[in-house]
Image 1 (cartoon, rainbow, N blue to C red):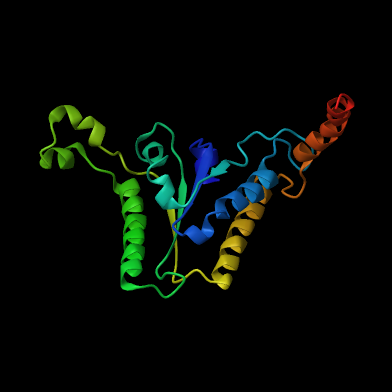
Image 2: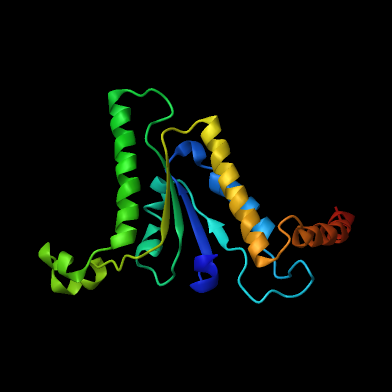
Length: 203
């Protein structure tokens, strides 16, 4: 609500640092965008404010070499949720435990970089050529939420789902929209029934 309605952000990234949550953001897309992707309020009037954002994201390690550039230095302000776990799901060998530690180091480093950025003075202090200073400067002050649990368990997964479901419900109440209808989806189904005979007639 804060960033969408007061800073005009259009999307929201959800970035779990766990392969076991590789499809979690896809679930949230359905939850959030189908529930709050509305332009008419409960009373049938057009809304005068932004409602549901575009929700997107993948596990963080995949995103770091794909779209994190946009989040860090792009012209669009993109709020992001980082979801991480202090301990791996299974007992791991020392080598794999070290990999989990590296994963979490990236988890915390990304949120720190987004929050505080890097000033031109800090870049120059590293001996970077002057023509590269603007390219290696990060403004920071990019909004993130860090969600950290001890370990991913069925209970913790349920808590995450409940957290986002409650968020979507509360947003719908504040925007005065019905989060539980889906007329946009229904229209497509009706039209598909009309189109299908034309496709099968010549088969």
